[in-house]
Image (cartoon, rainbow, N blue to C red; front, side, top):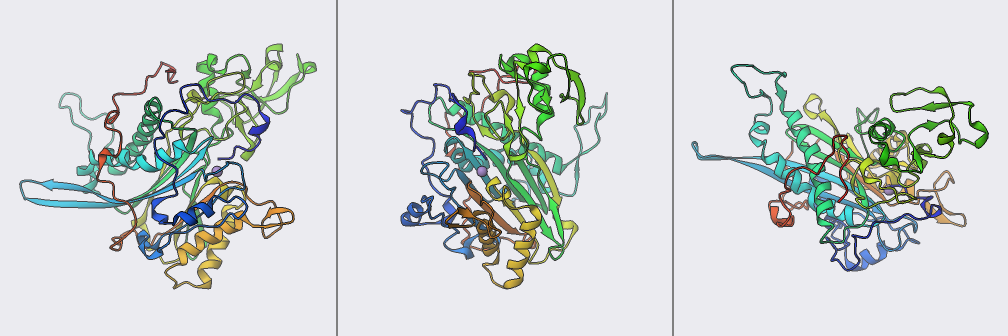
Length: 482
Ligand code: MN
């Protein structure tokens, strides 16, 4: 997530609970599937070189999926704040009557873009899959009957009040709940562990012929199909600008969350004292368009809760994304608590992979905002097309695509710093890219594959797992600070 410009804003602090004396939840490391040596890991931290890392043994990546990453150009001191994970695993159904066991394989790819520390991203990369698996286990009997609809439990007196619920809606609910639990785990565990900062999250789940993209933040997923002719967006970027109506609605319901310094209304321009009594263009929680309102003295004394556009948009002058995990103690200038405005809930989009025959060149691209801040979807499409056409039969082709995408956004270092091919300023952020072939979704992964299986639920601290009940909620939906 972009945090540039933050340096100029004073007094951004995390509240005192995160003592430096607490043990870290997970030690900093690069993703396990990279299998990089200590030497490479050390080199990867060099912001001057910004080497592009890919897995050591590409033939062990599930479906030969491509991955590449590089560090930012110095915005975080020693670490790449992006994290990634791959899970190759399955659900197991035992039928004791027939004495049979069925397994339902599934694969997940995740990217977690950290900010203000590596703790939240590391925790999510290491444990989100456990929450997802636990939730999927509770619906596996429905998932096994993928084609059948799930019917709501019938009450003979009243009957069903909804339509039959398709299995994919249960999987969607599972993902939404798992993301919420992940964030709540971080909230609880930060009492006993140092889990610094926050992170955005995007997860691609391949299950029973469907692709589920769960996105909370400003990572992005697109598919390129039909000989690279067709580009489909499978996520939207959640920023203060795109999430504005949700944020303003919460501020309307709970105005105390804005404190003394921030105001709910967005204005087309910065207000000055002489604007009092004048009519100025504005937008509120219920508006997509603009209208005029008369400016009051209170209006000019408040900074709008959302300022800026695109990558520059900020919530409460502090944070550039509005969804993800962590940030439980993040404060705005003036000490205002920001977390109530942030949500871990992803938007889940579903692609039915059975509806089409895929070819080798058809891919899913998932990347952190470090890529997308310099590469448009269409540019990514062109890069992937060119790379594929240069050597379509190479088993490393998806890795090469991922590397070429990272390279295009990172650029090369010269007299004017990091510049792209077109001599524009290159991305200064951490960049992480997966390129995953779609033609393989029905193919079992090859033996010896690198994706970590996650059968060991105890990876999550047993003292706090499973989570007990809901995060505390007030009527307005904002969590109570603890
Ligand atoms: Mn980023």
